[in-house]
Length: 88
Image (cartoon, rainbow, N blue to C red; front, side, top):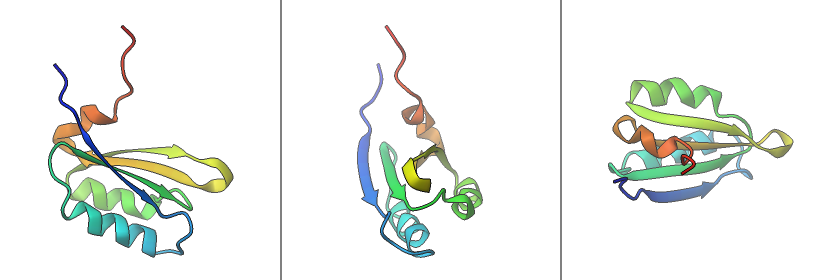
């Protein structure tokens, strides 16, 4: 049986660098197991990815329209929450 995951959302598309990355990192300081952060960013958050790796987070980046991106982040132990649902 799959466990429910709490979803937190941030829309950071109107912010200039480095504020989107800073806000994501601030939110991750209090992210608990079983929670997932989804952030909309003005550009793919490439500088953030090695930080997430070093801090033990799993993530998936989705390309958005007009150069924007969406990144889903959770604790590495909850990486199953990033996988798309399987067809029955």
